[in-house]
Length: 271
Ligand code: NAD
Image (cartoon, rainbow, N blue to C red; front, side, top):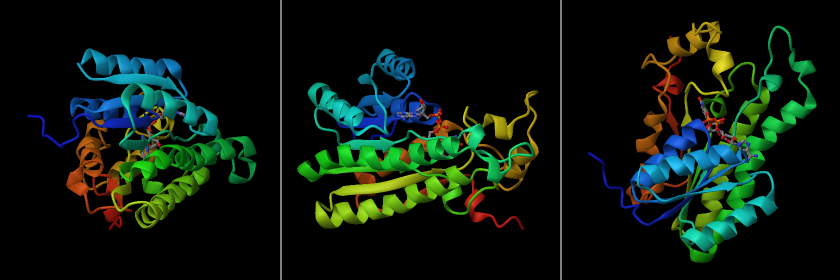
């Protein structure tokens, strides 16, 4: 049975909506009667996601958009408003890591290419701040709205090997708290800003770190499972309840939190 979160008729913008986790989140929102604008730098991925939603009876539009380009975000905001109306919800989902920004036996920290570090840092950090400026301004004008950022386990304590991603996600958690305070104090207490911090979900960005070519767990994959009290990787569907809760009025007095969705990973000392 589908729970009713009171979101029917709302408008959501989901950056990175063509990806794995935010694709599932986009579908869950549409099943609640939310009109979903799927923004992604990969046009085909955004279009495929919007089509999937429409086939399931939901309302969606696909927009090719770059979270690092304010002009592209402004253009997307105009199109969303014209077709769906003012956005009520922004999900800052675009993000990710790159193999070239990951240390290994072949690539030391000192040799990580500047370009790769910059790409990862900017995508996760500025890629959250820029859409929050563009869509947050529309919320400030209406004195209502919800922003949900996507942080990570790296934000609480950095994981080995991925320095740029860890630093950037720590910045996302910090920015989430900053923006929550700023919006409530300067614009309206009815604008809430929170984040989810997913644990380990097997997706394209981390497959090379967690699985060997033959599908067996890598040593890192084994360590993660051993440190996850629930004993498994997350399934994208595990995010849905928390996301719907945080974007709906069920969480009306919650702003500035970073909610781990991690099977207990962040609670476990390892002993
Ligand atoms: P994904 O690669 O499937 O999705 C990310 C999407 O962002 C892709 O569709 C990509 O095309 C899009 N994107 C990249 N650059 C962009 C840009 N400049 N502008 C607009 N879109 C852009 O990855 P995912 O695993 O679904 O991750 C979604 C979010 O969750 C990311 O922020 C990621 O860091 C975070 N996260 C993932 C995990 C995990 O275990 N997979 C854990 C914690 C946090």
